Amino acid sequence: MKTTTDTTLREVEPAGTNTPSSLPGLVAEHPFLQGMTPEHLAILTECAMFAEFKKGEVIFREGDPANRFYLIRSGRVELEAEVLERDRMLIQTIGPGDVLGWSWLFPPYYWRFDARAATPVKALFFYGTWLREYSEQDHNLGYELMKRMAEVVIKRLQSARKYLVELRTEGRI
Image (cartoon, rainbow, N blue to C red; front, side, top):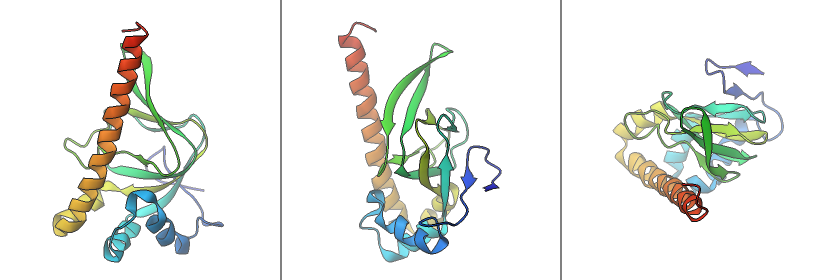
């Protein structure tokens, strides 16, 4: 297993469905990217690689630079926020078919929460900084990514709102 400079991301050696030749198909098949043009899918594939995380492994931390995102293939990821300096609050649990990470697209490009693997996770990793650069050159690509990521942001906000309503109803806040 090769380790990249990011200690929470490991490149997965080709085996089975994690072969370089399967990457374009997996990118094209992910629900988040359905309907993208073949040209845009080729760019996304160019910016992608396989990633795996062990149960309990931190994928990213709130406040760290956001330069990537993931499309979850298998497993569950818990999104958490810090509360009162030491406590953690679960915001949402996401799984196969979901997108992890939107902060790479919106300034100031820092993570807004923590992400931790609740189970072993297999994902597609995308270099967000590269995609921002491609989006500056191809505004149609940028529009498609912005539109899709905006949906992710809305889902996260709705999940956080629902959780706060539950806490309020239970008298915990």
